[in-house]
Image (cartoon, rainbow, N blue to C red; front, side, top):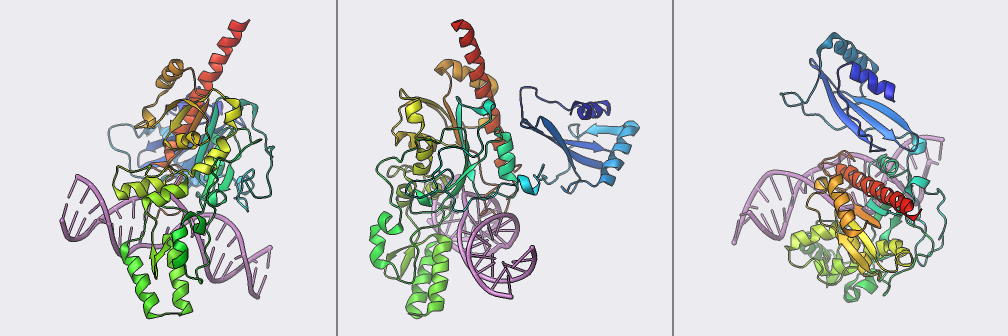
Length: 433
DNA sequence: CCGACGATGAGCTTACAT
DNA sequence: ATGTAAGCTCATCGTCGG
């Protein structure tokens, strides 16, 4: 690794490697005349190795010929980095360091992670143990969409101590599906459900819908709650079609498809409507009117971006025995982890959350907060899924996307907390002696 | 400016048939 | 083993009326 970097330095590139970071992606654009390559270096702390990738101007993996041309051009001494005066050309981000087939992470079926209440398949030992370096405290809990583009979960795992993700569909904790992956270093023994237990079917969750529910609509679970809902026009069209073509099985199938597409429930005669914000709150395990105070549209948006409280609380429930006096929490990207903890009930000594911008939370600030409050027991957060989510037609650009790349800030902050925690431990040990 | 609406598929999975 | 079909998804953008 050092040799490779050394050669680049000889060629006139200044590639900075942060020695405090154990795992890092360096994305540097190199230019030479009219040639342009992007260099990706990816460090894996599990393998203590460095992988080097190049992409060409189009964002594809550069051919050997392109790399050779570039190096020859550079050796004439005309190489420069793009940070100079002129703006860099627009380029697509490369999906870097795609793992090979045997490294890809496949989604389990059924999607129950290490087990869920009321279902067989519960295990209390991880099939792949947590590496020593990642053993808590500090504990961490990271969340994102399960069905991310290929290779994303393998990469996120490699940046989080190679801990294998736990994929859980929250339909085992509610009346709606929600397929999510969680990377965490929590114990998995002696988890427990929070009370009261949730409603597991649409009928139990929304009893008023039962009398309007058509027999040919055999859904018992809703689909994943998204950030947008159907317009009133769709409800109107469904009603008109059903009244016009009563009993037509083809129309009925189309209607059910629409209901699945837009997550509609039957709230009147032939009236299929989207959920109200307060109904979504209940479905996701939040207190009533939790998101009240902003526009309806914004409520839907934040609810679509939420955790499912009962799922998260089930995973976090093991903290109750570990921290009977309360948990110091650093919450990133979202304040929803706190709700899950409120419902446990685990006493919370502190929650630091809702940072306007995680990028502003640098190592210095983290150390200051930890000195001030006595460290963090749990770092919880779900990084932005915008560029990973299947519903995104415009910019599903992967982990390096504009929003989703904030994942690396989660890693950075976690690493800083980790580092500081262990540094303090050492001081304590010396004092003990 | 704010909020509601409609148009905009791909990428990945599983299930099933061949 | 391989092909085919069906199903699902923490969304974004421009427009338009208030």
